[in-house]
Image (tube, rainbow, N blue to C red; front, top):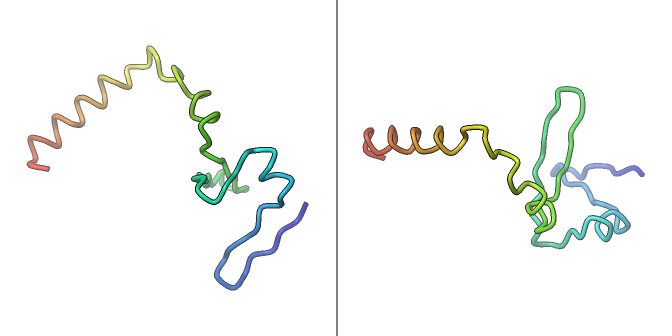
Length: 76
């Protein structure tokens, strides 16, 4: 499949792919730059459910809490 950007840089995701990935006009699309390629990831409820528990045991919650504490101390 091919798509060409408009003057404003917009592209159309083919209907076949929109149906396959359940993309609607309200679906948030995350754009990832991997250096030599661009990846579009739809953030559908199904995609979000798949992420559940990915950070478990990684210490991410502790890091987040520490960052929030620093923000409060800076007066944010």
